[in-house]
Image 1 (cartoon, rainbow, N blue to C red):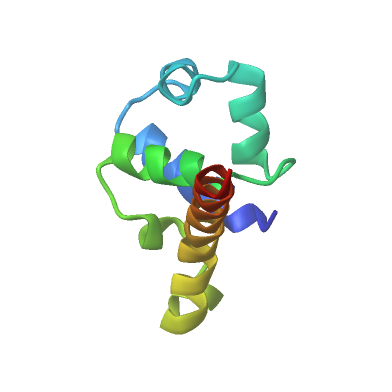
Image 2: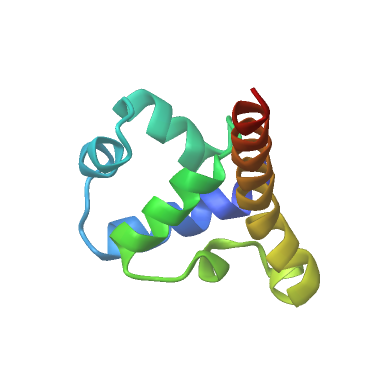
Length: 100
């Protein structure tokens, strides 16, 4: 994971006086796992990125590295593709269920 995302999250969290424990609780994960996100030691799931942005009162785009901020198409695809892939999976399961 690009560490600048974790750094931005940490800076925003600290500026709002929110503890790592509170953020981890909101994400339904351990404080140790959340700490790894901020330190850039683990990749952040899209759903967690959305929840973090919500908890910090900001947009997901504000948490992305500057290199991605400059490229709107790439930025959008990085955020939307996991959701679209999940929807595709759900739709495929529904079709296979209806075929039975």
